Amino acid sequence: MSNKIRWGVLGGGGDSLIGVLHRVAASMFDKYQLTGAVFNPVYEKSIEFAREIGIPTNRIYEDFDSMVARELELPENERIQVFSVLTPNFLHFPMAKKLLESGFHVICEKPMTMNLEEALELEAIQQKNNNIFALTHTYTGYPMIRQMKKMIAEGAIGEVQKVDGQYYQGWINPIIHDPESRSTTWRLDPEKSGISCCMGDIGVHAYQMLEFVTGMDIQSVLADLNYLYEDNKMDIDGTVLLRLGGNAKGVLRASQIATAEENNFTIAVYGREGTLKWEQENPNYLYLLKEGKPAQTLKPGHEYNSAVSLDGTKLPPGHPEGIFDAMGNIYKGVAKAIRGQEHDPMEFPGMRDGVRGMRFIETVVASHLEGNIWKSL
Ligand SMILES: NC(=O)c1ccc[n+]([C@@H]2O[C@H](COP(=O)([O-])OP(=O)(O)OC[C@H]3O[C@@H](n4cnc5c(N)ncnc54)[C@H](O)[C@@H]3O)[C@@H](O)[C@H]2O)c1
Image 1 (tube, rainbow, N blue to C red):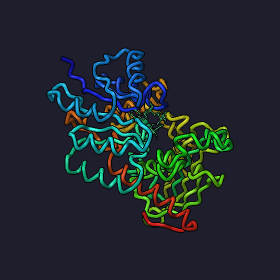
Image 2: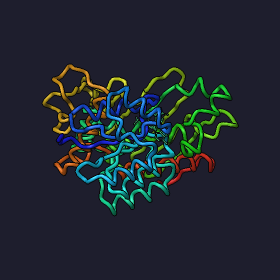
Image 3: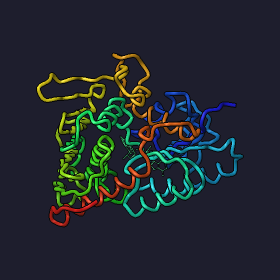
């Protein structure tokens, strides 16, 4: 019998954006076996997709509830061990809650829940049951992001005084100007997406990343969001001023109407002794700036990188790795945790990131709606 981790998938079918990223990531280090799934709310479509990707259909279930019930009937050594929740946002909480309560480990897409109340409830359940919970802030899996975090922690740029997170996309631009499209896209429907579109979908990545690389908590925010049309209930762009501890301050800029931008996510951290900058569209370069010295470009796979960065690099320097590899590193870290193996906490984001992310989304929207005022997180 295979000693791979038995893995279940919810959502992420052939019609989805994110499914392929998780399937490739899970297969990357030969640690997971795709054992069962509900890929789609329509059973026939789930079966059809299972056949298309060549996996047995005997554990493709009609819906989530029957999947959990039937898996729990199986002996523990056959039962699925970890589920990935890859559905639209409104299903993350009910699915993750039931899975954690039933003793499964969970890998969940962001945003973790629809609101802070759900996030806190999920946190209490996980703390009680002590299952592994990972939140796929994918970009934290890049080797040069891990290196950036290590270098900041080790004082390479000195005390942090300014942070800048930018996440610009343009994909909503053609949708938002068409009344029919903007009323039928799930990400613009508060019932399916939550109270925020732009901040909930991508602003939260930038927020989590700023806290991840600096190791600092953002303490208060002042937001100015843009909805563009009266009948559009969800922000599609926004700028947020940030206060971290001490005198450290910053800005987070996110947009889905930055026309023709693709996935332009950049992070810059300015310290007293230097600067570190990274760009998602060129993820293998980390830029180190020091006053009066030539800029340095650090790259993956070299011995000057930390152990946790090197652990996230599979090939010798000069072989570009990308977003599939970053997600693969997160799955690798989760596999270590499930097997009780030693791992660095930075190998995958988890419940704390999820709770803080939901707090960020709610606070940013409140700051905007209450007249662009400072609010504590
Ligand atoms: N980590 C990242 O960088 C990243 C990137 C993109 C999307 N996401 C997140 O991933 C999630 C999914 O996004 P997407 O773009 O793939 O969405 P999508 O609309 O493209 O796909 C959603 C999938 O869920 C399935 N589904 C819907 N209801 C279901 C149900 N009741 N049971 C089982 N399956 C069901 C759909 O059939 C589809 O396969 C979102 O929460 C999104 O925020 C994260």
